[in-house]
Amino acid sequence: MAKIKVKQVRSSIKRPQNQKLTLKALGLKGIGQVVEHDDSPSILGMIAKVQHLVETEKA
Image 1 (cartoon, one colour):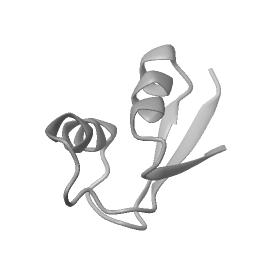
Image 2 (spheres, rainbow, N blue to C red):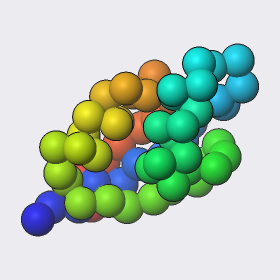
Image 3 (cartoon, rainbow, N blue to C red):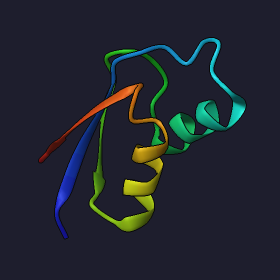
């Protein structure tokens, strides 16, 4: 399965609780942090939910 890198580029301050929890579920704790995940439908759905806070690239 392909890998995808997710980088948090905007803060979660003043965001709805569900977006904060989605970032936490992705393993992101702060701006500039990068995590790598499998390119699965559930991960892509989480990324779509917080797409205005993160940047992605194929690994």
